[in-house]
Figure 1 (cartoon, rainbow, N blue to C red):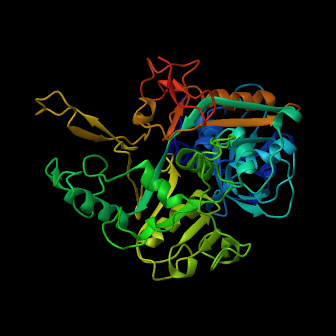
Figure 2: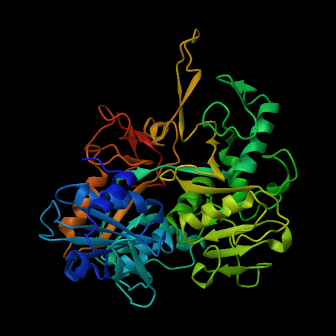
Length: 494
């Protein structure tokens, strides 16, 4: 059984009761509190996780209902199975409540400490017609499990380097079960369409991109990934995010003009941000005396070092949730609470607006880091990283005479170059839960589903080389593995 977001959406419609109602999940679907599992962490994996939960529902997708929170997925979502779990953990209907707020770290520290969190979906206030649950910002709930884009060691290390201001308890002292290295996902650099156009024009002029490809000119508005897709180097993006480098964002190295490259990143507790810190700044992997070979990321500073720091909150009527500083009108730096917040920051920059949708003088250029679970849409696009595309692959064409793969084909799965080992911005994720949990059977099933290419085919998500190998699963399973350690190089295993 393979589920996609579209399949889940269709499935949701098929199991809506005949008469629309508003009430608790127990009233609507018979989901008892004991059959409700609360999982915090990684917003970048939220829709993928919903599909994995659905794959463990007896009877398949026709028995799965997916709820947003007040019509948005910024704070998480709820997946309901109206039958039972395939592994026997739940003999009746069950639900998994996924909390996205603050990102991956809240799937690590609070799970290790078994500390209560607020801001979950309100399972007592759901509408089976609109497929929405309310947001409960007051009830404190201890997460049963956590999901993180990068392994716990990265979070422990970032707390030591100052990239994370929250201490992390050593999981070995708490009996926490850590499961890493079974699956992962790629990440890519997203840019505003305005910056994409400028980068393309500059790289065409430099001869780095063709004037035309496949009979189509490489000009503004051509966003087909592949031949005309501009590239950013690892060093260039590192210069944008490096806390000590502010000159680079307005010197035309990317755009060819003096337009400011605004940064739309995630909050410090986000696994997306943590993966950026590791990949571009060697933080916290380089925290080893005497080398100390790491850098800290740019961050909004409310302690007195910031120029114009402001906190936006969508619950209070703002267009986004997150922290922002324009550094006196010199450079826009946004830390979005959710993936959608960072993405909207990039989109609004096309219109010369800040993340809160207010016009300013910082131009139309923006860049950020996003999981490849996300498909490019109006306002933002992915660019190549060191010349390798995250969403297109090179292929041979009929007119090929030199033996080279001169053509391009879009990769809607956004993982082909990852699993072939050409694109290494791809951490392996981790699931963790307390050893005393009563849901161990079900949580283990979710982890194993993530790892099984026969059960899951999700955009951007790959299975790590292990029980299942790349041979025979060439589009889903990586040729190598990091064994769950993002500080380790991706080593080919076959």
